[in-house]
Length: 267
Image (cartoon, rainbow, N blue to C red; front, top):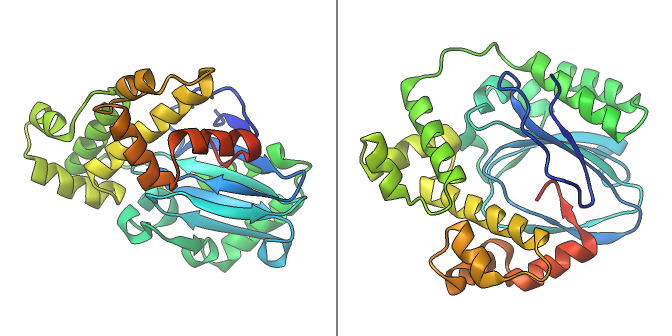
C-alpha cells in the first residue's frame, strides 16, 4: 500500500498508511512564483528530492535530520520537490545510520545510499511524468533500499510507545508518561535520544507546536486561548513563547506567513 501523497499548498490532512511502510507521509511542492517559504521542523527524518535551478545539476536529494527551529528559504519559480517523511525509528532501516547521527543535519543522499543507488533513483525521478509520480518513485526506492524489518528492540519499543503517548494526548507531560511506563524520566530521556535523535521534552514541544498550528489553520478566526488549552500548553503565553522559540515569530505572524506563502512540506 502506498503512503498518502499530499500536495501543497493547503490540502486536507492525510490518513496514515499501513504499518509496514517506513514512509509515514509523502508531500509534493510546486512553485509557481518566486517567494520565501517556511521550512518547519519535524520530529521525524525526511528524504527530499528537488528538481529545478536550486538543485545541484537540476536534480538532487538529501536526508534531513530532526530539527527544532524553522528556516526560511527563497524558492524560485519552477522549482519542484517531493518529500518523504519517515516513520519514527526507521532511520537505521532506511538510511543505515541512527537518528542522532543526523540530528540538525542535511546530508546528501549519495553519502548514505552510495553513488550507484542514488544515481539510479535520479534516473527514475528524471523520467517521472509529474511530481505525484515522482513521489511514488521516491517511496518505492525507500522501500526497496530499506533493510527488512527486524524485531523491535525493547528500548526502541519503549521510546516509540512514549512518543505515541506524547503525540496523541495533548495534556501529557514527560514525567507522567515515564511514570506510566515504569521508568525514570532520566532513563526515558536517554532512550529517546538514542532512538529518535531528540529528547522527549523537545519531541513534546514539536508535537504541541504542530497540534496548535493545525488547529489554528482549521479555525477562522483562530481562538488562541482555546487552541493553547487543546494543544497542551499551560496557557496562551506558553504557546506564544514556544512559537517564538520554534518559528521565530508569534503564532499570528506565522499563520499569516503560511497563508500567504505556504510551508515546505506538511503542516
